[in-house]
Length: 149
Image (cartoon, rainbow, N blue to C red):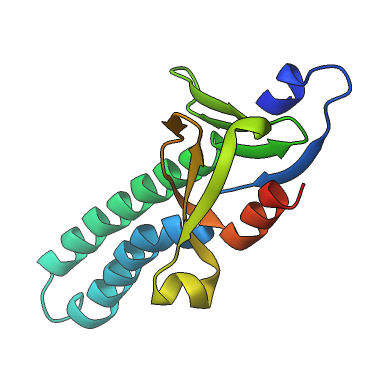
């Protein structure tokens, strides 16, 4: 059961659920590509390249598992009453902001963020600012669901 489903108040409905973008897997893909290149290009000419390729493959697997776990344990939800951000599995970090307190939702996207549809979101409220949510997929959709109420 997702975290948001356990904390919903009576009559509260989830308007939008966001997630981290798949871009967080890129370091793992790069490390695996290096491992493949080392095996194909250097394995026959330079035998220690195989050991380096195995090392890169292990690092790629570790990077992939870390990114998957981070994506799996992060929830970003907007309900009709509040915004809820949760990350972590055992050590959980949650931040909530009432919709009545939201003044603006800032979206920052790089060139590649615009092309691949990911970015950072900062939610500004009265007297406080929600920490920046980095690497969110479809940040404009999230902003539109928060501000269009």
